[in-house]
Image (cartoon, rainbow, N blue to C red):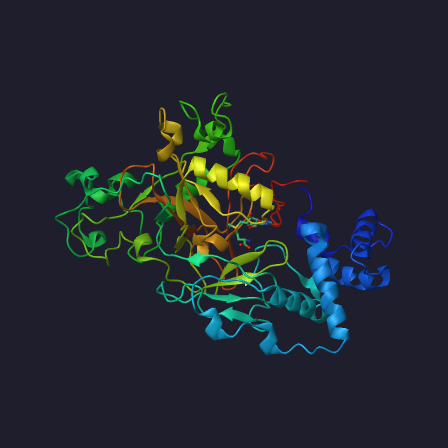
Length: 461
Ligand SMILES: C[S@@+](CC[C@H](N)C(=O)[O-])C[C@H]1O[C@@H](n2cnc3c(N)ncnc32)[C@H](O)[C@@H]1O
């Protein structure tokens, strides 16, 4: 077994090689801005350590981060004191909408503060999903509640290391974009597929109602609202290695391949087929407190969004979570696959680092001739909820994504819900396996340089 990335990075004692090709390139890029080598070198050295030897973060956007950090360092030497008030936007300004945006001064100042403060201790960085013991003392809270009161719980956003603030609008329900066809219609739900005669809590009735049919005549949840072990273990087993065994192939033309080349589409590369949870829905007679309505009641556990040094923003739990706990849904814009393809083409041009799409392709393998408006996905780039911050971890993530029917039995559209695969400690980062093939450069879920820290990491570059 190979050593994990975390081990190789944190124990690397080598200093920055002053004559290495990348440092020379950085120096000459700064010289073009009229900045001399002796000003560049100390800042570059600190940034390199701060970003845990990730050159890409320094080189991105034509060395913009490096230039910003140098300007800040020069400003500071001129005696411009940085006060806490300067470092954060006034709260009145932040509370106008759910959109977060970092001004360039804010960004520059944070980077500089970080360079000075963390110069000596940044090697303590942890890329893995393990418990983060420093969570409580070093916090710099940017927002008390990114949901703006839309969820039952508050979700704070803390920036312990000064990375760029995310810009997006927080929503709690998926929202349809243009011609995506979402078949919400009570007429599609037959009386046999719902429990009109139930009242109260379906889980407490002696005989499970019709809504348990999808999950084999038993409800997927326990009375405490956890996923039953048997159901969860079967879902986890679906993900077992080698993944290819669990793939199903489009019978007609694959929507992903058609978007790439409508005239000469390549054969389908396969789609996962996962077990569904079916919750009671609008046509049912039970109440919202029914034990078979867990996902539709929204998140209830204590979560926090925090900044990492290798993966951008991330989510952690602030409390212990037993195996099978519901965390949240993946919320975003419902797009057609063609729209996602076009958005991805635009994003490639802008060289955007983080991407937020998830395919709703669970049933594509069993469909013949799927229409464009039926091949759907979720994009949480502009509109999304806390799930847009959950990072990827290869194989041994602590969350699993499970498709959930809430308003329609039609599997073109469904909800994606995250549950814990095992007991999770307070302050642990929450992660799920995006199912990425790191070799597939053309997949709509853009591959990135993986820093998951798992010993099973698939990105063995
Ligand atoms: C759904 S977003 C997750 C939140 C994101 N970290 C952020 O800052 O908004 C997915 C993006 O996060 C980054 N990411 C997620 N998991 C990662 C990992 N294991 N290693 C490196 N980057 C990761 C990648 O840039 C990816 O495109």
